[in-house]
Amino acid sequence: MGIWQFVFLILAGMAAGFVGYSVGLASLVSFPATLAVGVPPVMSSATNTAGNVGVTIGGCLGARPELRARRQLAIIYACLGLAGGVIGAILLLKLPAKLFEYSVPPFIAISALLILIRPKKGAEPARDGEAPGVPAKRDPGRNPLLLAALSLLSVYSGYFGAGAGTATLAVLSVGKVGPYAQINALKTIGSGCGNISATIVFMATGMIHWPAMIALFIGSTIGSRLAPAVVRRVPEGVMRTIACVAGLVLSVYLGIRYYG
Image (cartoon, one colour):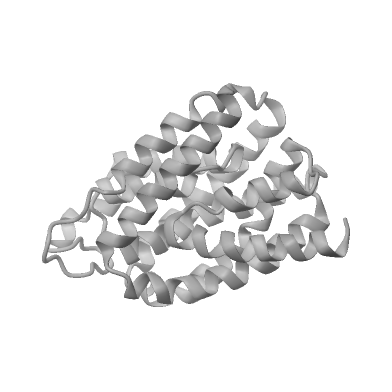
């Protein structure tokens, strides 16, 4: 890999980090970027997963207030992500990628539209054990169906990854776990831990293109570190609309790629 390709991937990683934290679509930028510099598709998927670990690190550093408020949920979601990422990575190594390709575009499109579902107006930011405006014992963040959905998404994140952040945002939004800034932080640590455990598997099996991964990691860490401050200041409705539109764009892009 040449120096300019390395620099290109750092810049792509910065954009991916910002977009990945803000709306859960790092792959919209980073996956095509790795393909553009000549990384083979399956290796590109693994490298993309590893490089976007930087989104988790930078995003969690920037979202400490939101994660402190929901510390217990953050730990639960992180554990689900770690377990699911390992399973998904093993599936990527054992199963043909075509298995999910044709179902991914509509899956992402539906997830993007679900992000528009919002908690009730006037709700205060939730803290551990409570949802906006409801007693602690009814915290929807621990709903068994929601936890099951997050577990499956963690497996998907390790297997394929594209749109996993969007789908996780959608699940947390439909479950009315909290305001956008909080569910975005929880999405970051849950999906991110899936990326981390999947990365360990990919490293052990030699599936990572190291120069591309290092460049993406540097860029995504920087981009995601800056993103939480922006998310806090942009109106929630605007962020949800941006996330929805970005998800639909990724759905169209993958639809053209897989159906064309």
